[in-house]
Image (cartoon, rainbow, N blue to C red; front, side, top):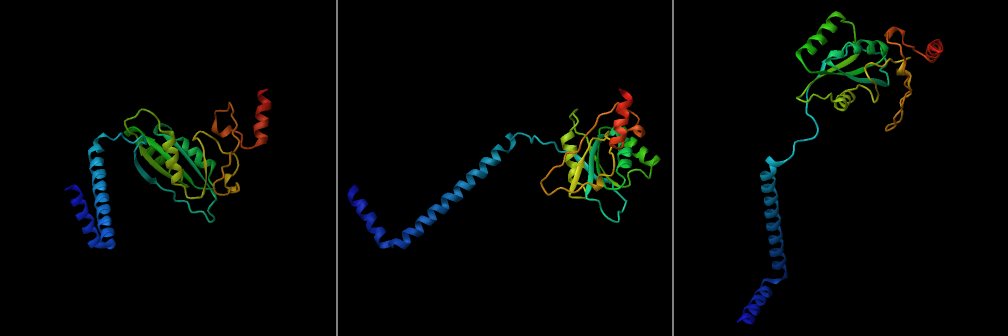
Length: 219
């Protein structure tokens, strides 16, 4: 009986011909793929509620809360990017003065309503400050940590030029960095940084000669 059934099966296949067998194979393969895809989609739906949260924080960002209004005849090749917490936003006024010949992309991390009020108050009292800066607000999430890396990346992603100099807000810039030769794409340039006990902004050395003179006085 088994032999007879097998014999009848192969006879049927011979009658169908090789072309029909290929068609049947393609139909079966397609059906398998459709079934497999449906299984994967169903598995994703079941696991949706079990997925771990993204490790990257998601912030509410108010881009260009105070956009730059300065129009340069020749746009400098280098922008400055920096960030501060809301209680130190006055540091930006000094930084903008240091780089008055180019654009800045600045981020303020706002934790409280008082931070926002301080921001508005400073630029109300100094309306001509930071006219060459695009200032973006990032509103704090529930974490008590200061997300320095995220804020830096937001500042960098909103610069107006191809080259960008990333600095801390409490750094003083000596000379005109807009004259720095723009490096080739993918090349980073590290500028020297000097520490000084001078705390008054207007007394910071602005060139090598002033720096060496102050160091000699301290010896």
